[in-house]
Amino acid sequence: MKGSRVEQFAEALDLGTTKAVRSASVAKTVGRVHTLNAVFDGKVEAARNYAAQVKSYVLDNLHDLLLEFEKNCKANSITVHWAKDAESARKIILGIVEKNTDKDSPIVKAKSMATEEIHLNHALEEAGYHPVETDLGEFVVQLDGDTPSHIVTPIIHKTKEQVAETFAQHRIGPPSHSPEELTMQARDYLRGKFQKAKVGISGVNFGIAQTGRIVLVENEGNNRLSTTAPDVHIALMGIEKLLVSEDQLPVFLKILGGSATGQRLTTYVHLISGPRRADETDGPKEVHLVLLDNGRSRILNGPYQDILRCIRCGACLNVCPVYRQASGHGYGHVYSGPLGAVLAPALEGVEAMGDLAKASSLCGACEEVCPVKIPIPHLLLELRNEAVRKGADRSQIPWQWFGMAAEDSRKWKAGLSLLPLAGGLPNPATKGWDEHHTRPEKQGRDFRRWWRDRA
Ligand code: SF4
Image (tube, rainbow, N blue to C red; front, side):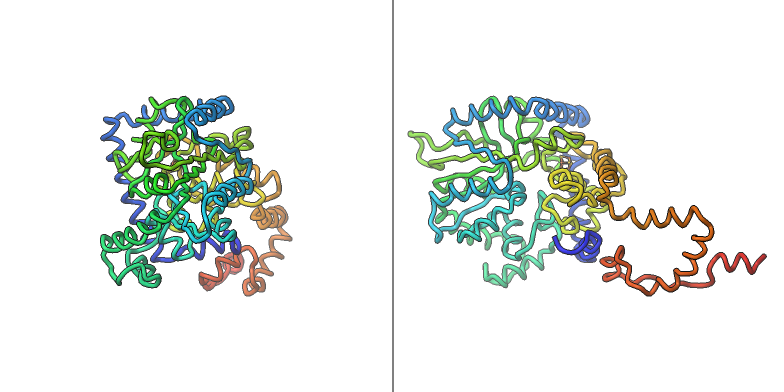
């Protein structure tokens, strides 16, 4: 995270970025309404209520359901690992990687916010390995040395011309501005990586407690190749991503596809039941599942528990007026938008990330679209209160000064007379903003003098 939060948001407020983010997020928001109405035959509220109830049940019974899931995964020959934090998750994954691949072979990665959360690529690269992002958007992000700007569509902030420029710089293929041509270039490039990789890494969309199966959804086919072409598949899953049974899947698959991209269903849905069986000719020889806590147990037992219902659809980002202006980069965390404004401080503490809770107009649009009915504005207010209670909200200091002056007319007048002098001084509270914006010049006389002269 660089600079102050104000600085981050100010930097992200680039006109080109805002235009790209706004047009894509508006299109997805419109698509979402049409698709959900169509797939649920107008009964979208009933579907949202059902999804919210299922996820609440999962959270209320998480301990038992996780043990059931572990038992059934093991019965499916999936090796289960428990990671209490990001560091232990990285250590577990690096241990599996070291045993199963050399440093010349690529490691193919499917899109996964959990791996972003634990900064896995950085750890793999530091250890001398070569992770390759195989989701098209993530691939561009990796080539650019950038970070994802959206949890579903990582390059929502980029135009096709910028992608073409990146591909040309990295000689992925001959210069082209055609999205189809660029996609084919990435496909050819990545195909070679899939063929050479000995380890593939993915996230998990849902884990099914009763059957011990891992569910992945995607549109590009790269998840399938990442999880089946290499001999070893490692899946990283947040412990809250459970469903109880496969009967619950149809509603969740429809509500996720519709809310995320306005699709009735994603192009691919994978139900992974373990490594290849003796009579099967393909698939991985080993499947490892890493169950990641990293602060989730703490959230589960606190006032922000509802955020753990999140299914990472991104609908709240698409509809948020703050996100549409600033894009994901303004938030300075892997989780952005209204989801990130709650989850980032809930995971990392209000002392570190509490000011993100103020990156919201509290218009309530996020709660209206959330497929699992998370009361995001309520959680944001609770986080703001906690930040004030803990003295972590430094923006209160100017208000405290204001309060002191406003209570005493002599102090107020003295303050006003000093204001013209202070106007030219650098203001630490608005430093980041001032670097990117010009303040308007003061015009005309001040009101008090005008009032006095008039009398
Ligand atoms: S908080 Fe709700 S709307 Fe936002 S990503 Fe999560 S499930 Fe989707």
